[in-house]
Length: 123
Image (cartoon, rainbow, N blue to C red; front, side, top):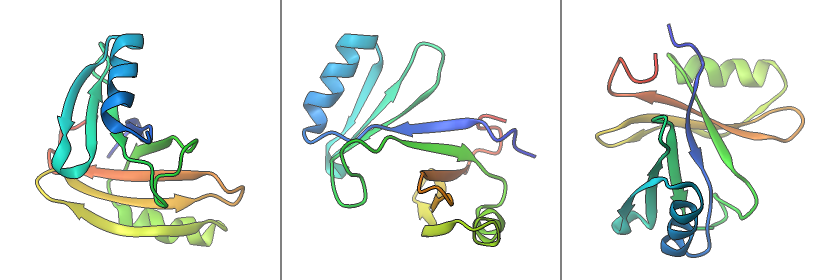
């Protein structure tokens, strides 16, 4: 069973390369560009990390997206709706990495759920 850890944090940028340089210079994060996806992965010294997506309708400026570890995204998303939240994006595969889903809580906060292909990921 997952510990419900924060496993990924996305910080949108209008210019992904410039955003990555900013955070690398500010915090010393390791940066791994993924230009084919207009995305950059980042990793902090403690091993935590996330990504920098290009600002879009799904990734608006000012909306940092926190992903929480999930053993069963489908079950969690069903529970979201029972608890008065809304599913914004159903469980979707990230090829070679795992699965994600996006929810909105009753207050309007947006969070992500993530399940890794690696069963030992952040457990």
